[in-house]
Structures are given as C-alpha cells and as structure tokens.
Length: 420
Image 1 (cartoon, rainbow, N blue to C red):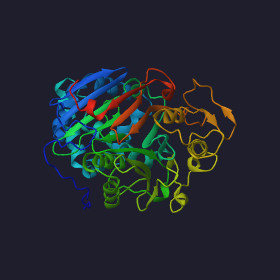
Image 2 (cartoon, rainbow, N blue to C red):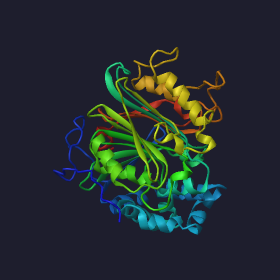
Image 3 (cartoon, one colour):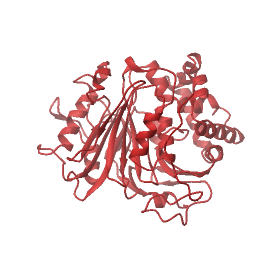
C-alpha cells in the first residue's frame, strides 16, 4: 500500500487565500472558462477532480479532437497507447495513479464523448498522465530541459527567481497550443501549470501558496521499476497540497518512486530552493547555498547519485553536460559571460535564450530550433520564468521558433484566479 502524503494543509475555507500577493480570495472565478492571450490559452477549472475533468473535456473538445488527429498521424506517438497497453503500462497506470488523476481523466473523457470526441478515451488520457514512466522503460531518454534558480547576491534585489526551458522535440500540436491550466481544487490550494490540451499530470507549475516546481527527465535505467507513483503525478499533488519547500520534501520522501527524475522546487516565501534527484530507490537533495544559485539539466550532479547515470546522454560531452557547463558559466560568479548579480526576470530570460556552446566555442544561429547543444536551441517547446514570492509567471508567447527568443507575457496568480 502506498504511504500517505504528509503535506498538511490547513483548510480555512473552500479556497483559502494562500499567497500574500493574492487578493484574499475576492473576485476569484466561480465557473470554468477558457480564453486566449497572445498565442497562449488559459483554461480555468474549479471543483472536484471529476468536475474539473468534465469542464476540461467540454471547453477543450475541439483541441482534444485535434490532438487525437495529430497523435494518430505521428509515427512515434501513434504507437504510445498500443505499446503501453501491450506492455501492461496502461493497466498499471489505472491501478497506481492518484485518485485525482483518474477522476479528472474520467470526467474529461465523459465530457469529450458528449461533445462528439469519442476517440479521446481513458487509455489515452491516463497513458499521457503516465507518460514519463512509459518513456523511461521503452526508449532512451526523454524530454531534455534546463532550469536555474537564483536568489540573494545572484539577483539585483535578492528575490528568488526560477527559470525553466522545457525541451522535447518539434511537436507541432504542443507548439501550437501552449496552455496555462488553472485549477481551483475543492478544499485545496489553487495552482497553475504550463502544458497542452489533454495534459493532466504537469511538468511545470506554481501554486497560490508560493511554490514553483518543474521537472527534468534523467536516464538512469539501473534503478527504475514499475511499482509506485508517477513523478509527474507527484507534482500535481505537491502543487495542490504543499505550501512550503519543507512540505514538498516530506511528501517526496514519503512516496514510492519508480523512475529517474529531478525536480527543482522554489519557495517564494522563504527564498529557499532545492533540486531533488530521484530514482526508484535513491533520493538526494542539492540546496540553494550562500552563493544563491542552483542549476539543473538532464543528468544527476549530487555525488550520491551521479554513478546511477549510465547512458551516453548523461556522459561528459553529451548535450546535457554541455548545457550544464554553459549554465555554470552563466549563473556562477566571476566569469566573462556571468549573469551573476543580474539574475532577475530579464536576466533569466537571457539565460534561457543563450545560444553559446562551450565545447565548440561557437554561437548557434539564433533561429535554430535544435541541434546545437545550447540552452536556448535544444528543442524548447515552452520557456518560462517564475517569481513565486510574487505569484508571477512569465511565459514565452510562442508563435515562432526558437521559443525562448519569443516575447514573454506576464501573468500573476491574482489574474489567473480571476474570471476573464
């Protein structure tokens, strides 16, 4: 039996004002809606997990239908569910997913079918919500990503800033439909995640309690298994239940892990941040120190974890290591290209768009989407900066490639929790 989460949430009302920057709960939306700002959709959901799923399926039915068409036409992704079913992953996902994930998928599937999108079924929804587990067992590596957190002397004003590129591949549907999904779960913490139509388990998000969190995939096949919880689903639980870095750490230590993953969690209330490097049987933490900088790409760095990375992707000279070396040049103090001391929102945007490869000594052509092993040219599909203490999210608007070089739009939790 899975151990219970130990994040404790004092629920004073159905939707408690968790973040001082928020408006005390006044004016928060009371019904689901969808709007478009620039190229970004904002989907607002409210209620129980099943109710939010039904709202999701009704409001995004057209996008779900488009997603099904795209998946069926993609030579790789069209095999996701058939392979997952044949290998028993879908059945395991149904048995081992958190109840909230299952309920939201059920509600979405029912509502989508009522809207005439019967192809969006439970196998597809839960398969995507179990995606990182499937990918890690059946293919080499997964999405690549770069993250950095900065606070104290690394920033102009000392405030904690968290930057993140989500790298994957030139996936047309995901690039064309960047979506901020805002949830007001009944009796829990409101939160917003960056994703795409159909995604339930998040890869990046921020909650109204002042936490931001994002994941990087790691390839460490020597220590993975198929019994436990999905890391992406853990992120959903952290966002709706945890109000501090300490609570997030307690939650992660209480769970049964299956795969290799790293989370960067930033606490805007305390100015703390930490990277959690995780496999099925190991967990180690790197914390924001006195220098005030912390970085993450797609290999383990903690000395207790580094030996678990066995694949070429995590070897010195790989894409992940090359981005890591450049990241250290940018966030560390004293170097000729250092951004140390200026890592505010604008500084973090500059970092996320950086196109220099320290191994080759060359700058990647600025319009290149992928292939240069640089931070800003490694197939980024979503680029964002969190300022969790102020409840701010800056997100690249999309509409062009590479994504980190597009204009960023500013959103706040106050705005996201208000009716459009």
